[in-house]
Length: 265
Image (cartoon, rainbow, N blue to C red):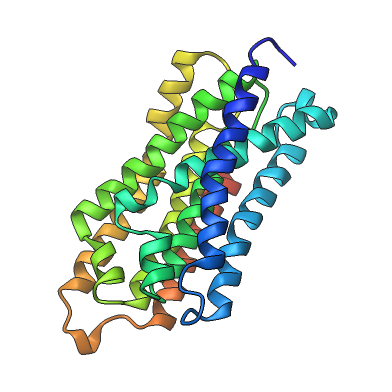
């Protein structure tokens, strides 16, 4: 490891204990009698799935030096889990809280939104690990940029549509699935925006600005859809099944773009 990498390890462990210790403690103990068991299972499983996604990226798409050394894979896995925990602490600021909405109030609509948000955040950071680079500082810098795109577009969508109110106040399950699906798609596209071999700090910033266009387009489509849906009469509101289908359309479009476009450098 380089001289920089050990300095990231201890803060990463601290963040894992802080964020994920709180997540799993609350998922296990809050509202123990009223909350369905399947909801707790989803909350327990979601971070594990996200960790496996990051692990798969490290094994297959990370820098050659990382893939060849299990110590490097373990180190970047720890950084990724810590990063994801830190990102999960920001969800309540965008209107969706795992504890308040899913656990305490039992909002079924909030569960797919929370799960989609955490998976989208994982995909956003996973993209920062794709390609050859000089070390952890490049991964963290790219992760900051991709995370900024992810949360920035989520913030824009929330401000323009107030979709969190449809989820947490109106308990609109369809809105929860649509938000969750769009966040997974935004995570894919924001991660793709920073994926590729490292060139320089300035080149990475330029790439993010240029390659964030697909994520911005998807966010614009999502905002337009939500505005149109909010204008419809309640009896014509999009149901859960149709919303799940639309969520898969968002994800499939983002995935198709990433696969067809490939990585850049």
